[in-house]
Image 1 (cartoon, rainbow, N blue to C red):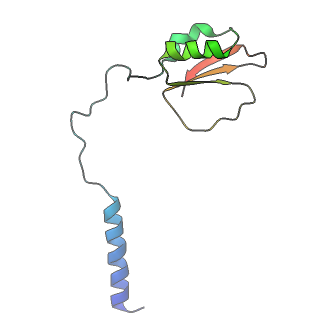
Image 2 (image 1 turned 180 degrees about the vertical axis):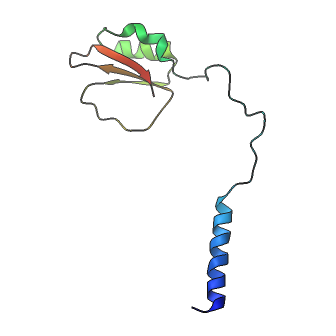
Image 3 (image 1 turned 120 degrees about the vertical axis):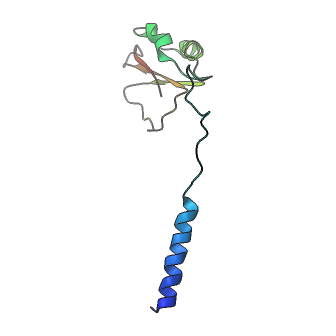
Length: 105
């Protein structure tokens, strides 16, 4: 490979890498909010549900009380993704559908 070809390849790679980087500064007003975000999930609001039997009606009530946008019941054999969603309420249940844990995510 001659010098001009290598130089073009190196310059091209440098330009591609530079295009992927960002030099923009974050504005100073982007401080973290002090309270819970709107429509954010607060599992502590429904901790009292532990020991109750999970039903679709109870799930909806819990979702509303926790301020979550979505909710789901997780059985011992449920397949779940690793995707974190801070606006989702999870009700973990045992084989008899008794709630054993509440969490957001």
